[in-house]
Length: 104
Image (tube, rainbow, N blue to C red; front, side, top):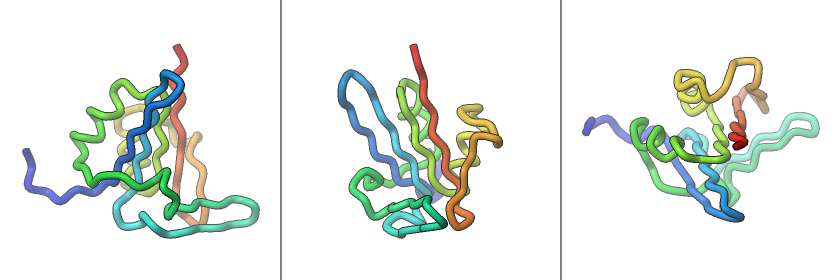
């Protein structure tokens, strides 16, 4: 395992037969961002979880039904893993975020 510090905070929730994984850049957790009618409240319990490294995030996301990605590092990982495309990324105050829905 790498000695590199964890860059992500990951929350895994299960409900209605679905696995929801929320991945947030560690440095922005707990902050709020607003722009027009768009809002990201990263202080909400939905985003709180455990600090994890990239390989752990990939493992958690493997069988997730929904993945929420918030922050530059998290969204970049989603693009690198082909979970999302650049055109599917939204921003609020220059903070990128995206959602992956796996139907099946």
